[in-house]
Length: 527
Image (cartoon, rainbow, N blue to C red; front, side, top):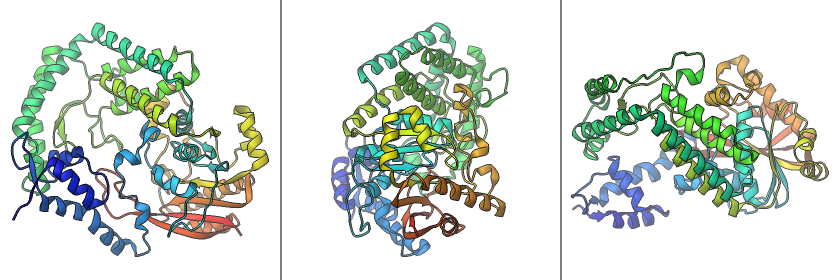
C-alpha cells in the first residue's frame, strides 16, 4: 500500500532517513525534476514514501556498495562527505566564482584542523602554522586555512587563478562595497533603458512565447517524470519541438530587427557573446575601471567575470565545456524544456553582486586574523621569500623565521584541463598575460608517454623547489587521480616517501558524469 507524505512530512522523513538536513525545497526539487512523482494538485501535493526511499537508496546507500565493488574496498567513504548539501560544500566565498577541477573545502578542512578520528589518526597542522598550496587554483586551501587559524601561501601560474584566490581572501569595507555595486547596477539599468529598448521588448515577448510553448509541450513535472522513466525519447522529442519553436523565434527577430552576432570573430569575446551582451559587458567594465579603491575594483571585477561566464552564447549543459555558439532557442537537457540565449547581463550582474556581498559577510565572521596571500608564478622556480617581501614584508619575515609546516594541494591531472583556456573570456577582457606554456599536464599536451614524463618532471620540480621553504618534519598532502601510477616515481625523484594514502570517492563531479570515480590523497614526508 502506498504511504503518502506531504512535502513537509517528506522533508522530515528524508532528514531522519539520510541522517542529514533535507529541506522542503530539496523535496520540491525532486518533484520539479521528475525524480519522484507528484500526486495531487497544487497546494496539496503529496508523494509516495516508498518511491522516495527507492530514489535515495539508489542515489546514496546502494552507491557506496556499488562503488566499492568497482573501485575496491579500500575506498574511504567517510571522505566522500556525502552527508553534506551543495550549500555546505560551496559555503561562503568558495562559490564566488566557478572553477573547473577544485576540491570541496571540507576535504581541506579535514586535514588542516586539529581533530583526529578513526581514519585521521594524527594532527598535522596547528593554529599559527603556515601551509603552502603551490597549485592554488581558486584558493580553496587559502580560505580554509584562514578559517582554521593558519597562515597560508598560494602560488599559481595563472594570473586569473591568483586573482580569484586573492579576491576571496581580501578584506573589504562591506558598506562601501555595497554602495559601489549598487551604483554600477543602477547605471547599467539606465544604460539598458536608454539604448536597448528594442532588445528589451524583444526579450520580453520571446520569454512570454516560450512560457506558453513550454507549458504545452514540456509541462512540469509530468514531462520530466516520463523522461526519467524512459517513457519519452528525450532527444527526439526535445529537438522536434525546438525546431517548431524556431519559427516563432525568427518571426520575433524580424519584427524587432534584432542583430545577434558581432561584426568580427577575432577572439573569445567576439565568438561567444551576442552583440548587445558584449556591449553591456564593455559598459560595466568601463565603470569597474573607474573605481578608485583597489580592493573594491578587484572584487567588482570578479563579479563581472562571473557574470560574463554565465552569459556566453551556449547551452546551459555546455557552460563548463563549450562546444559551439548558440544564438537561438534550443532544447535544454538540464532544464527539460526549450531555453533561450541571454540577451542582457543585468539579472546575472545584479544576482551575483548581492550574492557576493552576502558571502563576503559570512566569511568575514569566520576568518581568523592570519596572513593569506596568493602569488602569481611558476612553482618550479618561484622565490617565495622574494615575492612575499614585495607584497607583505611582515608575512615574509614570518615565513622566513617560522618556515612552512607543509603543503595541501591538488596538482593538475595529466591531460585533463587547460587552465588558461577555461577562463579565456577574462584574459581577453582584463588583459591578463597568458602563460599556457608553463602549465603542467595541460589538456593540449595529451596523456601519452611524453606527456606523462613531462608531468612527472614538472610536479617533481615543484616539490623540490618548495622543500627549501618547509620545516624539516614537513607534511605534504597531494590530491590526485593517479591512474598512471606516477606519484611513487615523483616521491622517488624528490627524495621523499609516501607514508599514507587516503582513497576517497568523488561524488557529483558534473551534471552528466555520475560514474564511479576516486582520487587519492598522497601523504608525503622526507625520507
